[in-house]
Image 1: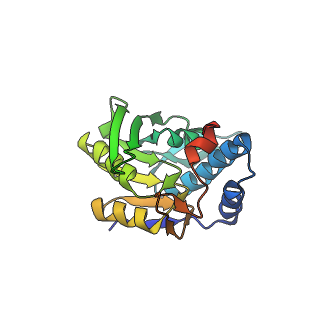
Image 2 (image 1 turned 60 degrees about the horizontal axis):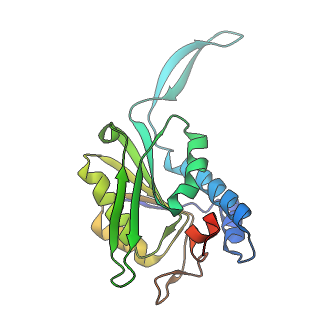
Image 3 (image 1 turned 90 degrees about the horizontal axis):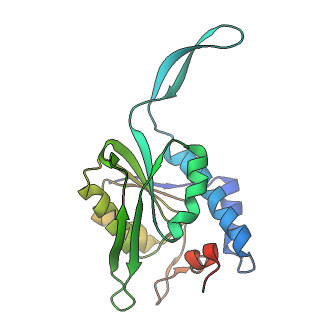
Length: 209
């Protein structure tokens, strides 16, 4: 079973509280999503492999370490996942970005893919899928399946707020995937929104209703 990582750092928890406030406006909401994504990404990349190199400091030759091995790609689930991209790429500027568009059918609540555009070398990269909310888990599960079809061997899923139902859905469908989240909320309401959650993350990031 892929591990579940809850990032309970005080700064993450504080910023999630600000995110929840219905009076937090679009600009601040967008900035908070980006900042929280950066903190969670810091933990999600903790196991990146290192290699030793030699370089000259102003004082002496140093044996020091840089990231080696697989390169990274971030794949936001459109559209709310886009709100996390500035934060994660500020940590890993060389990462490539793929995009996957999935919407929830209003009737069946099933995940339907409508767009996918990935880097050509995606199968050679470690992929971190990002979406602020893990609610039913349908979109995340579908996105992971799509990425696996492309031959990617190393996939992580990163979100800010999750529900127990969503976590269980992803772990059941993809037991090999590690999940990184800032908090696990109480559950879902009848409209499949996370409670207490933040409302519709996409609407709050982009100022739409």
